[in-house]
Length: 153
Image (cartoon, rainbow, N blue to C red; front, side, top):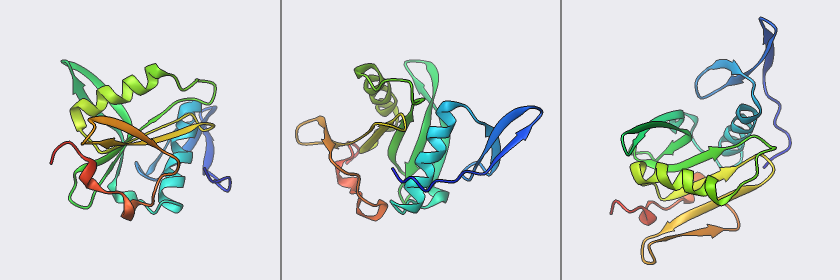
């Protein structure tokens, strides 16, 4: 991800906060939130994602349990296109993390998944023909993401 990320920070009531341009407000600066804000910056400035098509902490229900996806990007028809799972830098990206985001995808059925801890980044698309995820070396720009990989066809 890009290194020129310069977040808007402040201290309020003795706690550090970071400005979230998607939610349009300052939020508590946790390690995971720092990674999420760096990802939002990358998606918007480098990969040309429209900020208005991003949603933070999207509520989901899986097997009757409530959960939240860290970041969901939508296409221009308001269909979910990508789920991103952000972990703190000290959290290793393991199979369990991929299983977590795959569970979220059972609800949203997006064609693309992204997992990051700010140090490691994994992007994959769903291959309908093989009924499995395929990891990509690089994530394309927003306009080049193809909805055809989505299971909802």
